[in-house]
Length: 355
Image 1 (cartoon, rainbow, N blue to C red):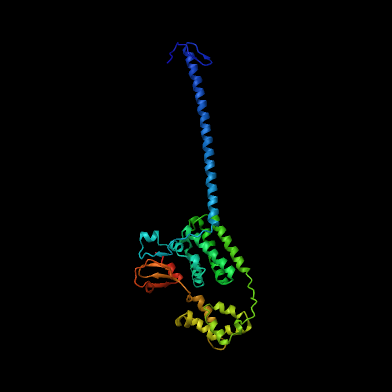
Image 2 (image 1 turned 135 degrees about the vertical axis):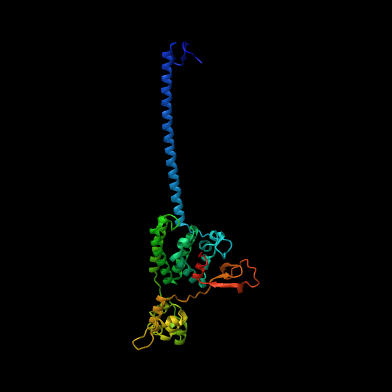
């Protein structure tokens, strides 16, 4: 360590043996140090800004990629077991596992829509979820809901059947989404707002496709419906459970219009869907003083729910509390599992997961 009065030499410098020289040396060294420190700090800030901008860019890119995947993915989430255990009580396990969204993921609805016996059941279930239960589904369940809905629309466009049924479903869903999207800031829907706007645009596109369907008369020269005896025609028309189908059938030909106005036909339809007490409260007389069963039917429909009829439904096993489609194997310990199964309507299915 040099001391005052000692000759101090550094590369390119020469100092006198005085205190003033030592002081001047320290001042120059200090200024150089401050300059180097300032330069280093500026470089650190610059590097941090670049790093921050790079991270923001990566996050934005990943978010755009994720939104695009969520909105365009066609992947259906499948589970090995096609059944779900329904807990009897309101427990922590029920809240975490036995939910409407989980049941919607596990039960094989994608295959069910291909079965004509289950098609109307699934469509009614989709309509009930679209009306009031869409926000109770998880993100994966909402994605599966849209994927299954797309398969339903494509099936109808190909088969040209059940067009009115799917139009009503799409209109119900679009009306619900218009309300929910306005409240998106309150976390009522899972996902980005752009994704739901894209889905709403897709629904409008599906509606346009359904409206553009042109049903052509097949080039068939054999026996037609109107060639059947009147008794057989009436017998077939009595099997229609929706009055709107009767009206549409009556518009196909003048002879069918006469049959579709048959009073006995509308009377049986009213008695099938509604109780005697409900009918007595909505009596309507015609100009001839007779009961106008056709007008009574449409008035009753506006006041009371119709009786639902399905070829196949979901089954709930009362012994092991497992929910599945009929014919699906599940781990039941009952001696006769079929005797323990109870059919569930779409509303009963929804009610199972209300707690």
